Image (cartoon, rainbow, N blue to C red; front, side, top):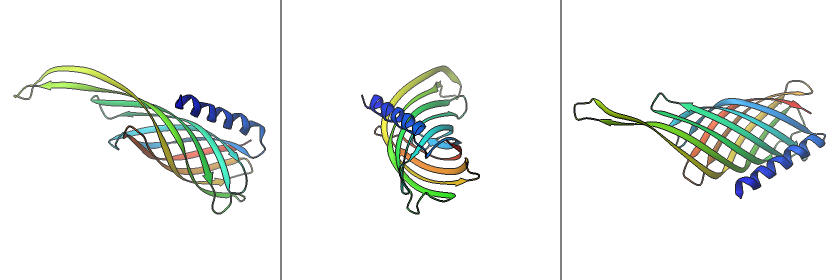
Length: 180
């Protein structure tokens, strides 16, 4: 139910953003620390932003991340985000510094190699195991975006997302965007 509601919010933001005059689409690439911070993940994000006024904006986004810390631990995740931003210095100029928060839902697929080692140190049995989990959480975001031209944007986003199951996803993304 919650993931369907979050997905609906993102679709509404995306459909409204295509009809409003002050909208943009952003693509982000970077890294995050997944789980309890023990897995380094490469992350991609797509986001639609809707500027409500000089101080507030909404966004809906879809993120994907993958981590491969060797043959013993691999994970990938998909997340949906719906955020509200406040620009304390107004978002009317070329530079937009903003703080954000919102809801995040994600699903993680993780696989790991379960080893049985004898007392002499030899591997007796090796078996690949997998786990999948879903969780709802919230986002805390600090973002700065600069308008390179009338339509092109570049920015940096730092975020942390604690989830109900105890997982935390924190990271930094370099973002590129275009105003519609």
